[in-house]
Length: 175
Image (cartoon, rainbow, N blue to C red; front, side, top):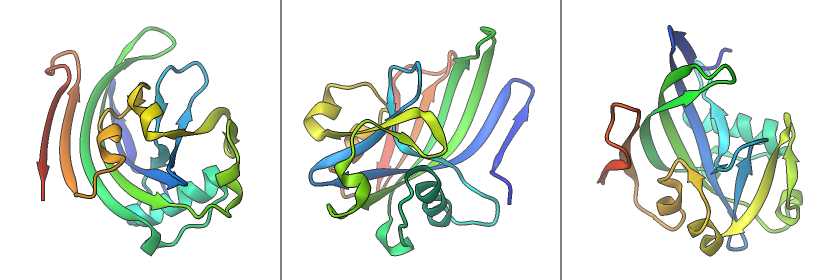
């Protein structure tokens, strides 16, 4: 099946899934080659698959970790609007819908003892475990990830980081 993503001109739409992965009081983040921001582990959702099924596939592909649907707890749905410049310095706009799940990994799992290791399907993307205190001092995208580390409430956010949008305007509703 195909990933849920399409382009229209210089605008791209993505339906994405990600996870806040915790083990022993630390959280797993990834950092891409030549990037200064940490990001959540995840990827694009797949047609005819739920967000949990898509996240399970991403965990297997990127970490080699076999999660179960009941292990994943949906904590956030966010609409994310942002601009980025490609290698040719051309401006692109992105509209993504992001489902963020929480996942606790037991300490006896292989990846729990690793640090600074590569994503299985992207050798240049590194994975690191950091504490909540370290996360507070680090640049993490999406910016709402820091708030979600210890939040137990479900929320919905609109994040508008486009040139035309209000910078750092975060609207959220909690149920």
